[in-house]
Length: 430
Image (cartoon, rainbow, N blue to C red; front, side):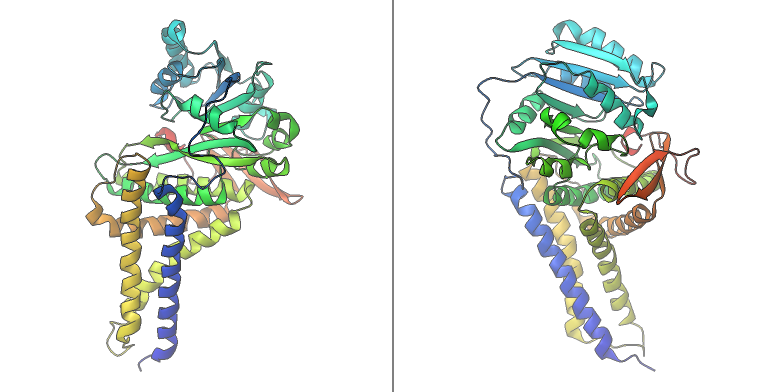
């Protein structure tokens, strides 16, 4: 017996309409980037301060990322016009990053642009819930008294010589308390898994601009935030430092700004064996929002819609081709096909357009993009499900348990790593 077409055709129209709505949403979020102005309160044309304040760069390390020597060289050649200092906090003297930084500082030290560079080990790993936050608290306690702006950078970030100058100039804009850059991925040979990472990251860039999610891999903040807000106290029970920042900024009357000109570009390719690690890494990025940022319900809704609508559209089209089951009318079938095609064209256009607008490498192999879009939607949905259900997470070899208490998430060290969660060798996955 054939299925009654009325109800299913109504579902087909609804799915096509929701997919069209997602396309419009993504275009709306991308428009500020495409026209060259970030969706933030930071002016696109930053005026240089009359006098550059004392600044301090904090680099916390656990493990030596392949890009670490290049990062230290880039820090040593900063063009910042004011006085600035560098603090490098390494997990322990036996950590692989210690020797890399020690050699780099000895080599670059005499010609470096910083006034002082300090390399120290994490003294109290139990000083906060996560080792990263414990390192940050130790670094903040050791800031030079003259420091007015603090910049954070990750060991796998790629920065230019004007990086610190642009961060500080933006952070000193009236009413702005913190600013950050973000990531950009452009796989050198256009590998399939690399394309998945690039597509997901392009969407994440748009959402992080809209939802005001900072990225600590390249972030600057006014020193007043360390004393005038409860952010430091929250770090003691948090997994990371950036996603909890927004609430404290707003409560103190400050605004956050995104700097798309400070994108950290990674052109490394990934292989198929990296796909499970990529899904776990995406899941951890989503988990950080769930734990510490007010936009989690919106992000979860976006993940559900993005990952399920295309799948439902394909299933409806497949059902319509089965003999004697359901003869789909041409109109809803055409609407579903148009919605699927428009979604693929959207991401091809966004990757190309955002790359050009932001001065980043253009994506490769656009003709195969529909396959990678579908795989990205699947990985995104699985990662969001993992993040929504997670009760523990492993990050750079340390396992953390998550619990809800007093309306807030609290993080604590777990005795054993979570089942099936491993730290891959690639630094950015960990």
